[in-house]
Image 1: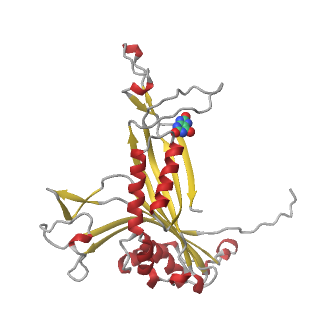
Image 2 (image 1 turned 135 degrees about the horizontal axis):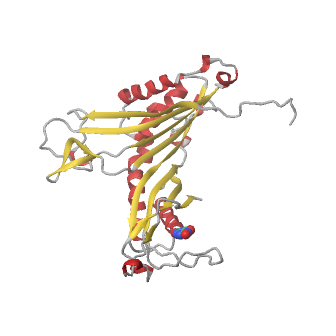
Image 3 (image 1 turned 45 degrees about the horizontal axis):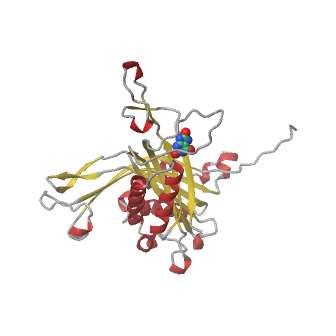
Length: 336
Ligand SMILES: O=c1[nH]c(=O)c2[nH]c(=O)[nH]c2[nH]1
């Protein structure tokens, strides 16, 4: 290689990762939702107002005319990552959308491109942790919650102002991860390539378990609906159009229903059916990606104790979960 090599900064993005934000919203007579609007059917008997809580881990990263902070050690273009963190907290306090993961992420993302002329793109990725109302004798409690699962609801927003503030638009991706599922029947794996590398037995019925990672993208906001350029004061209109929470609930439900009901020929085939179904029932969703680790439960050989647990494989009763390796099946299905 010649000693006259030259270099250029070909990509740069920075920000704060894992900003932990917990928000309480207390209903007042003025902002109270109607009793039927809360799907949990909140108890009327507990004292005090109904609380809504949202816990987010936020990554807020920026791009723009920031090259000289790398190449010339010039910090005059740097919004400190500490200030980025502070912004996440300030908007959690002041945004009317603070408990909606999608609208809060959009608000944070739009804020940075609006506030700083040289910031052209913001990428806000957050996960929402699960807090479900505690059920007390059949009634959902007003302000007590339980972490009933490791799954996270996810949102990733890319706000793009590189064509100018009059053309701001956003790529919106949402989904779930760590949604752990298992079925003990209704899953086969047969007909795969058999050659000198194959030891796996074909099975007509097996355990199928995976930690679902699902993400779906929305069709871009449309100029004809006056949602481009996207601004903070249009977020309620955007939500009315896309119904982010309804789509999230539907995506989760469809995923679980297809997983449960499909007579699975393989992880691949079930994945494709779930993605198709999700696209069928959610018109604003443009593409669906599943990433599915295949958690292998293997029958334990108990022949040493005179017990049959291996044959036929469909009748196995005692299994061991393999730590590693695991299969990994992923695909994206796109509306054409
Ligand atoms: O559903 C499956 N798909 C595969 O590609 C595969 N490969 C494997 O060993 N088991 C499985 N199961």
